[in-house]
Length: 276
Image 1 (cartoon, rainbow, N blue to C red):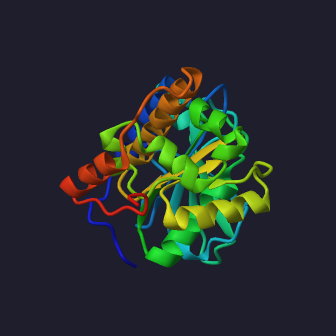
Image 2: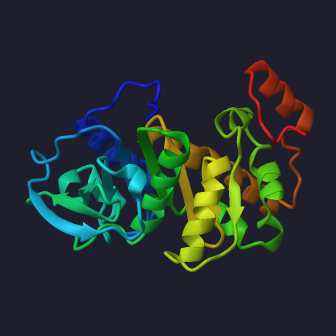
């Protein structure tokens, strides 16, 4: 299996990242109540029993043979992301994927405060499965959030188009073309947790590192860290906020021109499909 170029984080480091990133998602109003969830795949042997001593066998919501032998950390259903940082072991479970790729062992702590893992666990697991199978990564963070300005724009029919959305969100900050060089994939509205949703999301995250689930929220991924996955949400949401402000102001702002965006990309050696 291929590996990333980055040092393998420890379990404590990943748990800390999940807590801090959950808090950050809430700070940008991208998670109300129990909305939003985070998962991390680790393709190496991880000792989880010190943190999560209780074990139970589970059937995976989708087949994940490429993840066999690996571990997926995921937040629990109904847990508020803003509370994870203060009590992380109460909100996170660790799933060791069995050799059959159909079952796993769920490890939880003595302070567990959820009945099941996130209701979006099928979407998370499907993305991890697809990325590991196709690219051989041994680490991946996946974050689902509900950023309000991006979600609002997806309620406007004209913005439910990948090219239009990327033109809108990449034109407000010079950093955007650097941090979101591949842009964002806009998906149609699907029932949350449905098979259609899962399939479209997996396909979208093959070519993009963040998808926008129309009228719902986003899912972002990173092979580097949970922080990086949340950074993508922040940059995309900030672009959407500027776009919303411009709509409210009557479309008076110029934004960055295509040439200015191209010049930034050239300066920072960025290759992007959105420079034309």
